[in-house]
Length: 150
Image 1 (cartoon, rainbow, N blue to C red):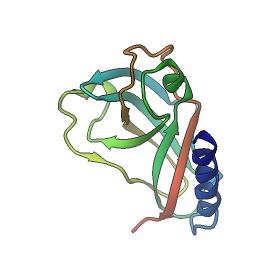
Image 2: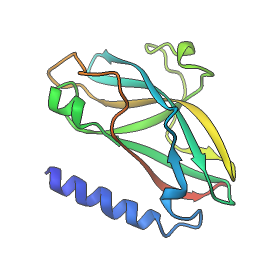
Image 3: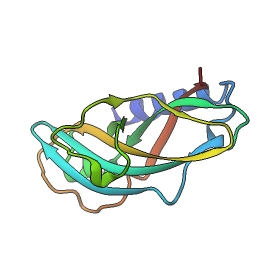
């Protein structure tokens, strides 16, 4: 199953290279990004993050973000290592009420040749554990489904 997921992620990433916004390497997560905290609410795990994304292309683009969090999966915090990212309507991570997330948007937008910081929650299904081994970002963050923004 893990191999199938890895192959699917590789295929999707390869297809994204064909988009008109350029290679997916042209839009990337910067080192200043960080994981603020994680929360378990019912059957859902939330990783609250501040992500700074850099677009080095000449076009405004939109995209989705997914992560593969092996650390949380191996520890039992989440039951599936793949988590979806949602853009939150907040200025800082301190503004977020995890029990009242409000509007969550899955598609992100960024201007041409810019850097932008987003308040993001990665959402996954809760596993058997309530503990996460560290407060570091998941190692594998994928910028996918990149398109020229409307």
